[in-house]
Length: 323
Ligand code: AMP
Ligand code: MG
Image (cartoon, rainbow, N blue to C red; front, top):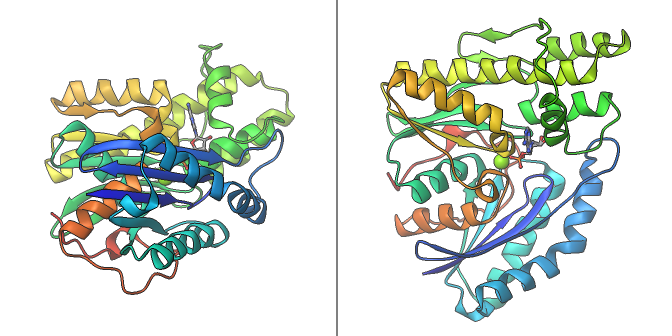
């Protein structure tokens, strides 16, 4: 079965093509800035501009034509309405014009499914750390449950906005990571874990103040990473303890961070759990995972009747037919 997936929840417009379990293409074009953050309508303009080229490129990379595709899958939510609409429109149009079935999937769950498909892991706790989404997700009692999440902004958005305050462009996470490498001087920062949830707002205010006072940026970057990643690892560990699960998976753009990976690995070793990490191209927003998710859902008999976008869709709203 050949599935073409389309991703457009935020900064990335991607087209992924899979044939059964093999990824034939995973092409993307992402909106970036030199300075300042992501403006939704600018990201939308970006997607409209690049979508034809990305589709063409993916088909060429996979060495197939549109008529070879058996299923079209797209990110239905959650995400920014502006950009989701571009992906949904593209998917619907390709589906109608080429008479190919269409399926809409949940972006967050797709991060978990591709991790399990690629690693052979069976029953993971997903620490999902991306731009807007920061959640600990695991399957329990017939649904993917959110065991903990951010109470305010996503960890990636937090890193991006911290970077922006230092005059750096989008995405800021990798820039913070590069500066953090240059320091080992830990400055005490607010650490906010409430039960299973985390918060970054208070820390952001504290950092703005420290930047104004002229604290060293390298030291702040180092300390920020140590603090926020510890918060994430703490709630991930508690989720493993509560569920009794033995596998941890990372997903989302922030999961590319090698310091976070190292901290997760240490925690898993200490608990006797397995830690799975996949290639960066499948951690960040990508369309191969949307194709994989579409395939498993379609094969389980699930069909999409309402293909409108769902910007506020919750992970635990999704009916699970494929487990
Ligand atoms: P996503 O929305 O899942 O594609 O993730 C995008 C987010 O990942 C952005 O906020 C980036 O700043 C962040 N990001 C990407 N690479 C890294 C990295 N190496 N370290 C920290 N954050 C990163
Ligand atoms: Mg994502």
